[in-house]
Length: 331
Ligand SMILES: [Zn+2]
Ligand SMILES: [Zn+2]
Image (cartoon, rainbow, N blue to C red; front, side):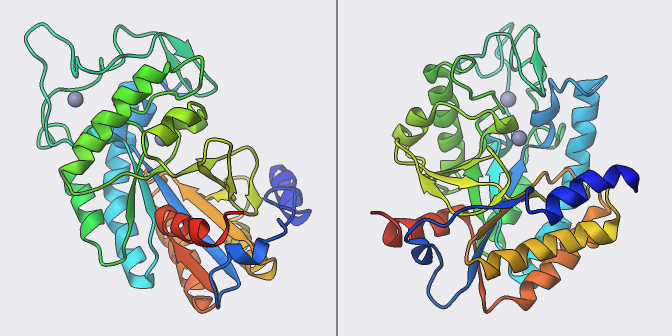
């Protein structure tokens, strides 16, 4: 466990996550009668996230394996959310709303969407022939790694009150300089069109691969809240100069292999206690494709723990919390 000393120390010394300074009106951030806030979001992407991942040797095949893992996990996660009444903001890749798509003879998939040029970032390298080159252009029955109307329906139908948020249509890099405004506008239009068929109005946005940018366009396209990852903090959202509420992340919900399982669970539980003690906001996030054993060993343990603090901890979606922020935290 030597290699685990570093993450353990940075947690014990409150460096990761650190505890942010309180804004003057910090009490307004906590809904009345509560001592802290918890937001949980999921990056719901199936195969789309991993197509150009630099760490994979056969990205397309491995992307589809991640998708299968996510498909196994999501119903189990939804069951736990229901059992402990915990709503999640599912930032969903827009293509997953589709039950099918096709390729006009000799043409490209989704010809109405402008494409990214070749680029590289910390996680991905795109040098393929077309941004949609992996799109099977079939249907959910034939390729359920690329379409997921069935899972979206399951999320919407859950009595817990989950939110469906946006994660772009095809999991693009959103940074200024990589993503021209017109491309993001096309992607967001396609997302809302597809989500609209489920009666969903998209309002919260999570950047694929932490590629933050194009804030002004997001605001102009109707988004109200985004997740940021400048540092892991137990802190407070901030409204940026574009009028978007920025929700800083606190921790990714997954077992850190450098730490014992017991310490992992302790760490996530302790963060909840610190959040309550400091009257602040915790913002957990996860990839639904995480290892299957994390669900009983981490999610179930943590959800059970969270549920014990139900009376003191306000738990909600990004959209619901944004409503609170707009009503109580604007200067
Ligand atoms: Zn398609
Ligand atoms: Zn993603």
